Image (cartoon, rainbow, N blue to C red; front, side, top):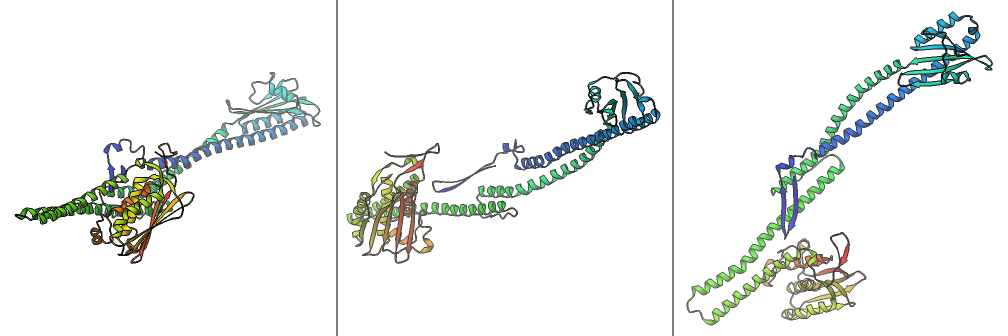
Length: 505
């Protein structure tokens, strides 16, 4: 499921693109599936690696122990041969009996060679009297013990020299061949036991993986279901997820987003209602005035002229609302539409005050401009002019007769600051966070008397944000208001490649 939540021209749009075809390969892209696969791979792979390493180590240790036993026996047999004068024909039956017993015990074969490489005794009795010359026997005749493991035949091979008690002379060689078949069987038995344990652990791992995957994905399913509900227009269902702290964070963030969506939806509905009302009111007045003229016969020119003048006022009011709405729509578009140029902010503010002084004079309101330094900044002069005009006009409209509006300008190395302070009626604290919303007016009756549309501050804020600036208000009821605007001296915005560039005309 694909969801999109965004605001377009002041209207909340929730896009829910639900397609049945998404399930075509949905299983392969399931988070639960890959989480299960990952958990199984992480838990099972070590088990098989451990099995392989453990069995190899066990087999190597058993072979090493077997070689040690064979070496010890070969040394004992060598001493026995020397002490019994075996090569002189004495006690041969005793030595042969001991050899046969040991060969049987180790599932192997023992050969005794004299110093001329003649085979004196073969426990298999097939090579007696023959000669055996090989690399191993030659090395052993040189007094060196040789130990080999023939993996293909599964045999341990030892060639041990038979020396005199003082080690000064090599009398012959003992060849000992021992099968590792019993070792292999032992390892196979251990492997089967290990396989049983591994299979049980694999099953347990799969079960735990499914449980863990479900534990992780179940909250996400609830979030997805809530988004589906949002797509249908329901914004009143918060979710409360329990478990890991990250899951709780998702829950809290989602609920916070939900509250903001509720607020935006309420704002959208109020916006539509206000637009309808504001546009309908002048039309209603025009219709009433026109009907009044139509219902009267022989209307005097004075009355006709008065009614027509009232109609013109209502048309101007309607035109002003439409212009403000169009301006607001333009503010919602891309920042690239700004016409950036180098602007003398002092001259711009002085021109605004000069233009508004006649309006202020009607209510005996004094306009004061205070500049701490000359300020030149990169901005859209037309839009910035509109923003500061709205602020000063509001200071005049919502002031008391004989009051004042003070505009001050200052700057540092990075920003310039414009402060608009008035001696007017002020704004109650509970409304200060809402005055920048579209069509929001604290005193609607007074706003209509002063000709306000309720869009001025919304337009002002959008213009300031388009310039990467900020605006805040400080106000007390019946004590006046102060609007503080901060705008960067240099206009910089990111381009499509993620870099930054200045825009100047």
